[in-house]
Image (cartoon, rainbow, N blue to C red):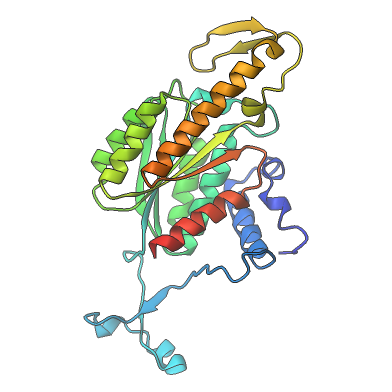
Length: 299
């Protein structure tokens, strides 16, 4: 990839002009990896090996003798059923995720991020699954590490449409009961729900020894509240409407949203949950780097 172009493919407004979800994912990941070599993170390890070192007790029939001949070291061929990590990506598809003040809604950004993570994980031979939800689980695809599985995951992601209200806490508790093997849970959501219930659901996963990474997606105006004139605000999930002048409530609104974000952030920190707040106009490399840092800790 042309090094002068890689940053463009990490911008959500550029990605919104590309219709094919797999092509988007490929461009994002390739652009991200290209950028790693031209940034302060030069040398950051991103391994996509299909082999692993031989360990005592491994069957000799899986040794790759060609690699041994070149390196004088024993390596085991790693097959699809072998994987370093099982990950679940939970994507919030509730109505509040459809809000946008620009070219990309929170749901669209969530899809871009989820598809890029899937692509990156499968390159690393990790197993990845997908859960879409609103008030309940809409679709659940179990984790697999076969590269051909990407088509299945992206197909479901592409078909995901906005649902109704949201019930993040209930969905998290339900999934925590279902997932028995320890792995990595990645939640992509605006987290617009009762904060105590959201944290309770995340803590359930931590209680079960899972690793958790949360990406809270917000539209820039959901924090800045930079609206002008007389505005009618509508709750996308309940349909409730109010007419007001934004300047009149801006100060109180900003205080409350920052208090909410602060609560989520502090609770995640207290319970060893990785948390990243992302605006939908932010380049995707920040989120991918956060994932790689988390992934590196788990090796």
